[in-house]
Structure formats: C-alpha cells, structure tokens
Image 1 (cartoon, rainbow over the protein chains, first blue to last red):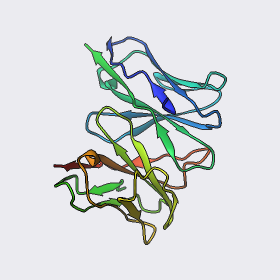
Image 2: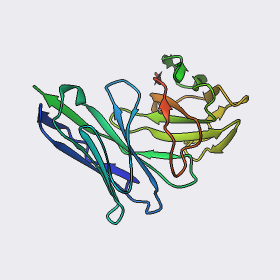
Image 3: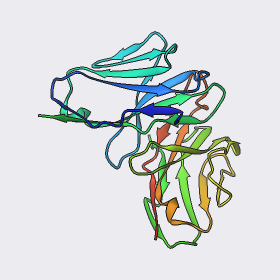
Image 4: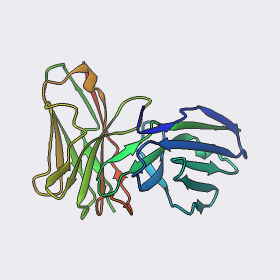
Length: 110
Length: 117
C-alpha cells in the first residue's frame, strides 16, 4: 500500500461545476499537508497548504481529517484553467522528505 | 527573482553511460531536494540537503545514484551505469528552510528529462 493515495481520475467536469478530491495517508505521525498543482510537462506548484481547521483560498477549500487520515480539496465554479493534475503532499515532522501522491487529473470542459 | 533552474532540460544517453544533472536553487535557500517523476506518477523523493550535507538520502534507489552540494548552493545528481529504468523527469526543489512540521514552500525547477536508450 502506498503511503499517500489518490484517485487518479480523470475527473471530467463542465465549467462551473464543483469537484472534490480526496487523498489518504497511512502515516499517523504526518503533520504537514499540501496540495500542489501540476500542468502537463511542467513542474509542480504549490496550490495551498492544508491546516487542521481547514482553509479557503478563493474557489479552493482544503480540509484535513486526522481521525480518518485524509485531506480533501474542493474546487467551486470550475474554470477551464483549472484543468491540471492535483498532487497531495504529506510530510512527517522533522523530516525533509515530502511524500507525494500520484495525483488526480482534472479536465474542465466548456 | 530567479527561480530554481535545472540543466540540461533534456538528456538522452545510452545504457551504461554516466550522467550529471545540475540544479541551481533559489538564492539563499538552505534546503534542496531531488525527486524523480515517472509518467503518471507523483514525484518520488530521492535526497534532501540542508546546507552542504545530505540530511536524508533514503530515497536514492541504489548506489549508482549520488548527489553533492559542495558549497551549499548548486547541487549535482550523478547517475552511474545508467539503465533504461532510470528514464524519468528529475526534479529539483528548494526551500528557504527545511519543510519540517510547520512547513515551508518548496519551489520546483522545470526538471531534466532523462532518456536512457
């Protein structure tokens, strides 16, 4: 079993739709969580950190459920430009190592 | 300001050859990370430097892989006796301080696409 698991998708949604992705992690000691966005043949870029209390950035909402060991990303009012692969990242305290999921691919269609 | 840069952007080599991949982190970033990404997968951690020293090299797949950061800035990933299975995109990232609990943002370079024929 992988340390960080994501549904690979693809998720194909129309513009304006709301879409949610989940990511589960196996190491209960994990403390830091992030969502990255990766466009085709480009490097990953930080989308948002995930805080225990949940956090929102415009149309994007990230949540953490420690009891069930998963994080989620909600995208509201999807735009064509949201089409990308979304990677979740988990970090164990005092470790430089980041563990990435394999990503969930989103395609937003007109 | 300048981001993380990596050279070359593409490298094609033959099985058994030696290759070096270079990473220039963002100026002032003390932490530097190497990852490998295969098609359809997320980045896989290889090694992390804090300053000049390798703080965690647990991700290096075998002793054909080695990385250095002699002056605490530029890093070179070295692969000996390359194999076809080494073909992947090699990503470098840097952060101002290590991404320990509390976190700091890792900024990725564009990667080096390595193809071993």
